Length: 134
Image (cartoon, rainbow, N blue to C red):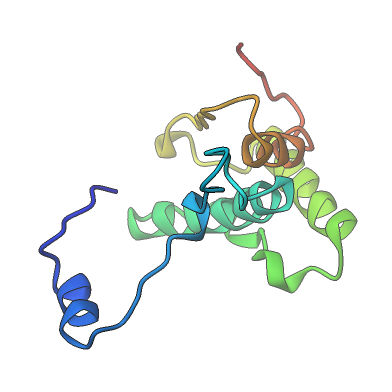
């Protein structure tokens, strides 16, 4: 996302004399180190939710896929249930339930050593026939 200092939302904050905090960039003034950061659970939740989002995207292109059966994170009782649903999704894809015309599935992770990426990768690893390239 590109930051636009003239965006309507930011102008509204400014005209109402409100403050907007980006909690990901809060740093200790003495050391310069970040004091707030997203963790592995943010990556896990994001990966679970993006699978459903990908299903919605494919549906908008006319493809009904197993991704539509992947629930959003809030619909799972716990992390193990969410990971099982991801594994079930992978099994459905492996068994040929993915329309060939829908194309290949590619996920890219950046910052492979970060907490969010590590969490996302731990969920993605639940899918059979996955491949990590380092």
